[in-house]
Image (cartoon, rainbow, N blue to C red; front, side):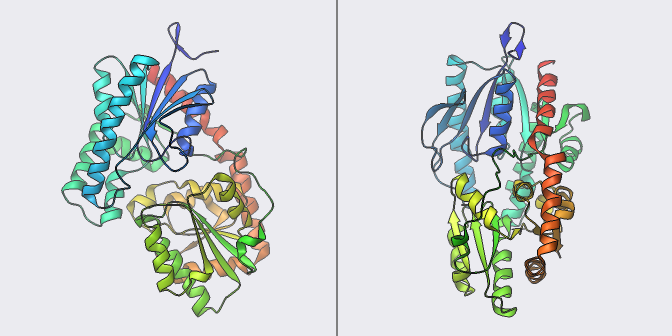
Length: 401
């Protein structure tokens, strides 16, 4: 039965700037959940490796993709990327409007400038929902280490986004607090919808021993290779394990792409540990699953800063879904997600992270206990099936206005 506004099915246009669909897992889970509930879904997003088609239909979801000038580096680079994205988002939104039509826009940040399109279409009676993926002022500060003119622009965009949105979705309680206190949104207009993993995608499969490169153990990582992800801390930890602890039986498998990938490869060479680290770049899900299922320990080296402390990292719950014990730095939302499935290294301390990794490597009983705890927490509390009703409730609230 179709979710409907009057006698017509509810039609939603997702606008995403930073990742292509269906690669962006949160967006795809939301879109397919709404589609299954009877909504008609269109998505505007950028092109990316493996997602080069300008238009295609997947699982009854219509996807419109556009090109971007380059993967941005530096404040001016981001300004160019965001300006180009905004142009294509507006152009394609008009195409969707005059072909399939839409009743609501679901804006996924970063960046926080999609409110310009949302505000324009609100003038014509369309609804606007903001899906708060990242706290952009803190993200800017994490990337560039300063609170300058562009930081103030980020704050202004965020404030205008919340003022434009009729409903906001937060990925955790920390983000909900920002929406209320900094964004000025009424509490009953903010819905927490966590990015829970889907266990039908994150399958437990047999390990692929060749990924260990002839060594006994594998430490796995999946995520973006960017400035705030702390890959440099992970590589320093790897160096300490190899050079100082004299452990030559541990290999490191790092899955993911990003602006810092080449730099991190060079850094691994500089540290003298290239032979102990595999950088896969961005890979299909099957290769990601092979790496994580083969790993004995998984790591989250996200730097301790304001942004990461308040953000929920998908990689944590993906590790837990695959029953993998975790080592990460002490972060508020990281601890909330993992709880007893993780050991927590001291703030930005690569040496302590190295020791925690080796502690787990050398204690198979503890690894199994932590892995089982994480898997059960996902099965009983964090899986996407527990979040889907909250998303639908947010949409019922949006269309009741």
